[in-house]
Image (cartoon, rainbow, N blue to C red):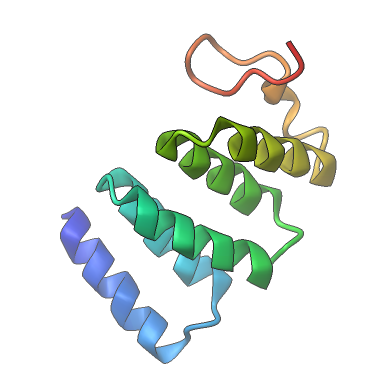
Length: 104
């Protein structure tokens, strides 16, 4: 199922390569498939196309965490929080092992 979703997302991007939402969808599928390097490349582009979207930066932080780059992960999570502090309050008090802990 995920491979089919990846195929569909790639086909859509051939038509609209600068669409941040479609590229984000592809990156999420890639993360679920364990294709972290490809997801990182797409998420980095997504955050340049839509630089003020906290969800995109949060997901980029997650991908950095999956790649082992904790410093960049924390940086993206902090930036997501500055973009929308109310929405990202769980970054300060996450459920154990479900979200990043910032400012310990």
